[in-house]
Length: 589
Image (cartoon, rainbow, N blue to C red; front, side):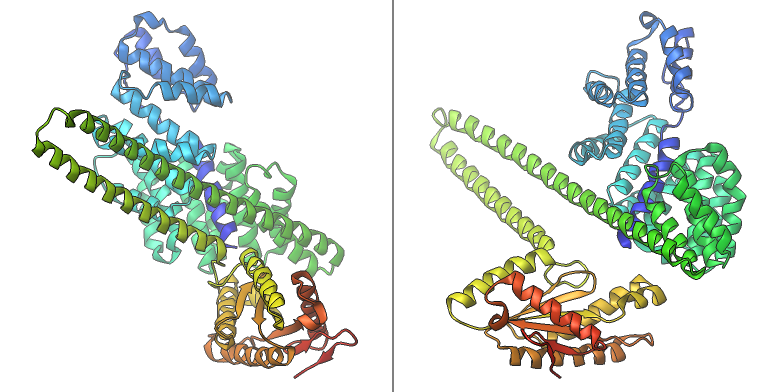
């Protein structure tokens, strides 16, 4: 669910930023007739691209100054981006980042590249462009250019999932009097985007009241509707669906006039959730059906998760079980799709960061090697003192390289651990557990040692999520894993194999020993659920056991036998330990 929430805020940010990021810039050009057309074209480049391009076609480039010609080229490349010619636009904007281009236009091009690479999810070039912009942002003189650079950086941080950086970057700008009201409101929206993801509990009614009061006269209705959407989300999560509905319904007419699918989808999603929370099931159904039947699959796929959940729940309450099942299947499918997309995005961002660091290190290493070659060429002409100095420099360089290699190895080890570990519980994930299991089974086979496998999952876990929320469900998973982990031996392997399904591999362990250990785990989980949980639910687990006597030394067979025993454990009433036998399966308590 965290991935889905992250996807929702990410899409909300893109939807609003695509409409407001490229604000009008005051006169960069000189005050000539062609210069006035150039400035007007700049003002209209996002609001009316066709009119902007028409004005560009009327301009005689020969009448423009060098700075104005640079701006003219910037607008031409921006129009290419608007018309969908992304590769040509990116090539042209990159050509405008050279030192021969006027500083203001160069910084505008750099800011646009940061936003375009983020929109295209090209994180490698995006981080490179971001680094270049950050290195030069303190040299930007024109305040309006500086504002656009700041907004591009905030957008990139939020879209790349660096919400804490976005919040830290945006916060100092919020109360700086040198910036325009429009910029302050845009920065406030990006700060809210980040803060909702980082820690929504730090927000308050007063926070939203101050921002809304400040931005109500900004002349930017898109900004105000975006901020109001966050305000409604805050009230909904705070248990005030009626207030959330009042906020949303006061803006829905304007949102539908804007007719931008991502924004409309966000409002319909919040309206469906708020009506459902307020008990207005027909209204909730109506907005959910709009999301399902409308053109929102590409605009905001995450909204469909909410829509199908509402439709499924309402159908179930009306005893339309067949329809409820169909909606539930679609809900699970698109939910998993969004989770997979978010994971892929995170992986690509991490790879891009590593590539950027590696390229920077390679450049630094090449620079050092070039310096070394120059120093070696001078060695023959220098005194013994120069030679001694060169030896010292070589020693320092070697130390730096060794330190760099050490840091790289630590970074690699850190990311390898992240790839092998389940984020929530801290134990091995399924892929890593399977690799370890095959290795241990092979070793036990070669040394003629018995091996057993315990498969268990939590009983009625979905009802815990549905009744108390996913945060409580996550806490329940961690409580169960901690309790089971304490019962394991030092050489036992424990891993998370699915949502609430876990496995324990027991080398040098017979089925009788495994039954005893599984029973200890079962009792420990039940006891921990009673003692450590702040809620009144009962936390229990069902266990299935198999060993090498029945399944041989084969991981797939071992897993299948344990799964069969687990299935039997559930059929026999749950909260019990069942050991797999060829004929029949017997309960062992």
